[in-house]
Amino acid sequence: MKSELIVDVTPQEIAIALTEDNRLMEVNREKRGVDTFAVGNIYYGRVKKIMPALNAAFVDVGHEKEAFLHYLDLGTEFLTQQKYVAKLVSDRRRIPEMHKTERQPACGKEGQISDYLKVGDTVLVQVTKEPINSKGPRLTAEISITGRNFVLIPFIDKVMVSNKISSNAEKGRLKQLVQSIKPQGYGVIVRTVAQEKRVAELDNELRVLVKRWEDTIRTLQHKEPVNLISEELGRTIGIIRDIFSPNFESIHVNDKLVYEEVKQYLELIAPESAKVVKLYTGEQPIFDKFDITRQMKTGLGRTVGFKNGGYLIMDRTEALFSIDVNSGSKKLFEDQEKNAFHFNMLAADEIVHQLRLRDIGGIIVVDFIDMDDKTNQQALYDHMRELMDNDRAKHNILPLSKFGLMQITRQRVRPAVEMQVMETCPTCMGKGKVQPSILFTEQLQEQVLAMKQLFGRGLRLHVHPYIHAYLSKGLWSLKKQWRMKYGVRTIENQSLGMLQTYFYNRKGEMLTIPAADHDNKASEKQN
Image (cartoon, rainbow, N blue to C red; front, side, top):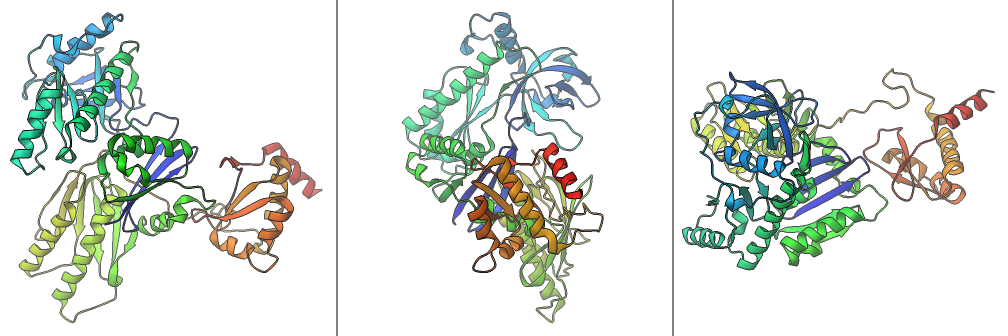
């Protein structure tokens, strides 16, 4: 299977698309320049409320909504951690050694949060679920530093090996190896990708993770409560860390700095694969070049088609996400049972694809086409489970109910991907009236002239593909004329509405006509 990562870097955000055999499988977006309270971020928070009924606390970490911390998320070594943090912030001249920290009684599973925390207490916490809708972030006090081969957990002091490693001999080797190289006072979870890895590689990564923790506590030492202490690696690096494999054919990045960052990380974890990182320098938007924009617009709507004329109707409610399977008007077999089974099996493939693509979490209910044959029902259930095996998110699938419904739960750690596939008319702004279309090119030429006068030559004009085709028409096309006369390159952009246009400079920065100039030109035109 051919896997590719396409990274689109803009001043506002970084968008990351994962494709498998040229099919879009995942889309992640990360805003730039703001605290997104991403999973893995570590904060020094302050307790605002204790809720005995929920056995939980609400913690201020700087988000507009207070974050949620349940008792079971304190971790067994919470008291030891609190004692260490208190000692750390009381003496800012030195950092206490981890292995010399006096061990406190472990937190049992049946305890009450009010026995361990009170309003006003400070606590070191980590985000496990990003803010979604009206809910703030979800937290854990059991801090972990995630790497490619290991997860480092301070204060635990034991080694655990992934259950996905089937070989008992390899499990024993890794456990013995990690026990010999890890510092005292740290726990380690050995991830699946660590199997068959050399000692030197594992030792090097463990040192890097320990240093990240030491940098974190060093930052904590000089921070007041309600502050970000450590930021998780960028979404791009995080995805590469979790999913990278030798099957990765290429990683395309359209920004020099992010390109260097990704390349350096790959040189650290897999030096032989660093060559797959490629810098994209084309003028066409990178998502258009690799067919990402089209797949997003066709695959993220309410109605999603699949093979042989079938389609899904996808709706989000407050409580759950519903998916309705329809065969459409097409009938491939005379036997209704056979026809239903065929379309249900095809629908299962697309449903699993949509769950990953949209990153749908929570409760999902699928209304398959009714089938009476128990064998077919079981075959569909087995097929669904097999398809979901490749899903990195934790999930649970139940067999078809008496009503023909399949219930799925899927881990939700961040908001689901949503894209507005319907476009508002940029001319009338949804009012139903437009300027005469015959005048559009004339008005656009006036904009081109105005932008050239303000910003000089060398600009890039992004237009809808249909408009681009019209401007390219003829031997002496408007596209050629504007390039020769004004120094403006015209580029098609699939993400734009029909009459939307954007100007960019050579650096990729979006340009606009200042309001004062725009008003002056409008008044001159009226006069």
